[in-house]
Image 1 (cartoon, one colour):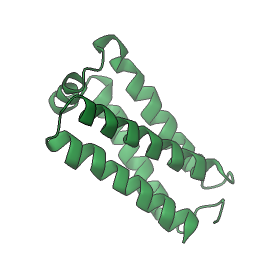
Image 2 (image 1 turned 180 degrees about the vertical axis):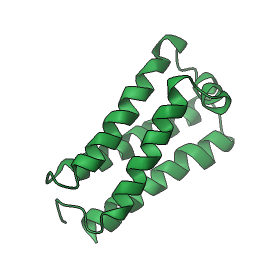
Image 3 (image 1 turned 90 degrees about the vertical axis):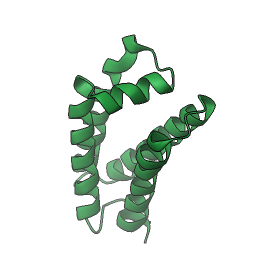
Length: 119
């Protein structure tokens, strides 16, 4: 296992995805708001997703130069999406947002961790 990303491009792509996710979470677009509502996430806490996503993007980019930070950020994103999947399953929201969004992002995060830091 490497503490510095190699190759770097999957980490940059994941960071860009997180930036877009932060932008669409700031004033949640319809499908993001529906996702939050479907799992019963309290509206008063919706604001927290933008700083979380921005921090993830920053951690991934900084992790290109700071050993361990990219690995830690990837692992944190994996934990985040595991929790998201658990919330969807617990809410019996077994549709598109679970399989396409949450599970898809989990796969991307795991692939980035494996490709850039493990293999």
